[in-house]
Image (cartoon, rainbow, N blue to C red; front, top):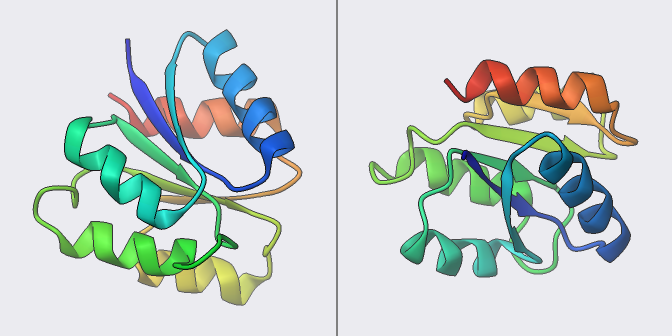
Length: 120
């Protein structure tokens, strides 16, 4: 079973995303901040990271840049999932190494299609 690390500070969004992913047969590990995600990454290696941009402390953009710069996590696909959905945000996410950018509210079919393409 593939594991997705969901980094999301909104409890409602976390519950929604977790239910979508679990119903699709994926295991979910959750973190409410970039710092908590870093801690979880020391003990678990997810197959994909679903990352919000607006987080307490370190932003999702900063975390994405760090993950892609670290040889230990650089190969893990990162999908940014955010209410920040301007073209500039998408370009910035791409420049920082994100593999995909999905705007909120999340389209379930698009989310699952993207995840399936990235987890092989």
